[in-house]
Length: 395
Image 1 (cartoon, rainbow, N blue to C red):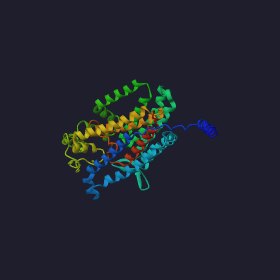
Image 2 (image 1 turned 180 degrees about the horizontal axis):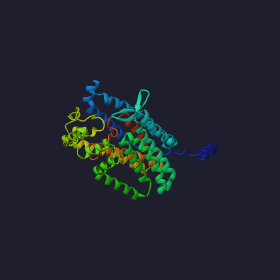
Image 3 (image 1 turned 45 degrees about the vertical axis):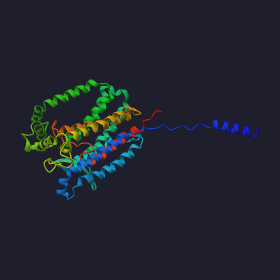
Image 4 (image 1 turned 90 degrees about the vertical axis):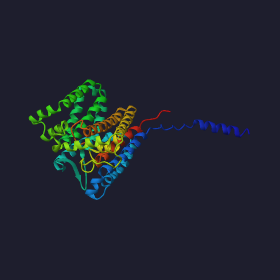
């Protein structure tokens, strides 16, 4: 017994001498946002099938043509989102300069050799594939501005540095707006939101909102003046006239607006039922695209429309939660940029469908048909989830 005791004491000392393994900190992953993305994407596929089945059957002899195409791209985008979310978001900062330069190259290329659809060059073909470079520009600009503002730090509050950021963004927004006005507006909105969050100069932004409100209230008079001096094209003025008085311009472009409003009005409180829309049968052109919210209102009623809005509000709430708890300014700005993109696009789409603003041809995120849009939206969601995955949980 006396011989074993010293041995046990020695083993005890050795055990105490060995350093304890540090426990790896638990990291957060926003599954609420992930499930929301899955839900809204699946809902979008259902609505795409409902809105497009009639026309798809006539054109392609396959009622699920548009839904199947969207589902394949959404599935690929989902895989990409998960992969992007598992990589530390700081890694993407290395590609900021490259993505910024590539944005200019793509926009110039689409202006020169892009595929023309409905009089607009928005598509760029690469072999058998084609995509809209404007969707890449949005995510590239969010990444670039996040890097630049983070490097500036508090110096971003200087008017000069704010001017530099605007000067970086305006030429790119102009190239985009030349063929896609709605995307140009979204890019300007993304810059506005990111600068608003990053700086202390709130009065400047309030002034910008006031000027925008003035232009909104006197859009008709301003539009005619701008056309007179050659700064506005006749087709752009026509959109303003259609917005102000769609009944008087039914043949010039008011038809789509009016049919969309008829769809919204006929839905009532609970709607006609899923798949029971009348307006999708050729009355609302390309109902699965920009005007899909009107079909939602017709088939699911006010209840369905409000539910969709609340889903997006919940998504924005999750963005805000992640941004507030992000490990650093760079991560917070990435999330703020994506939040601005989603929020502005949802607001503009619903405003167009309800004729609150002129028709600019803008999709409803995750719900409208559009392969390029849903693919890059998924990648943006991957970046947001990557930021959430770097948040350390305290015990």
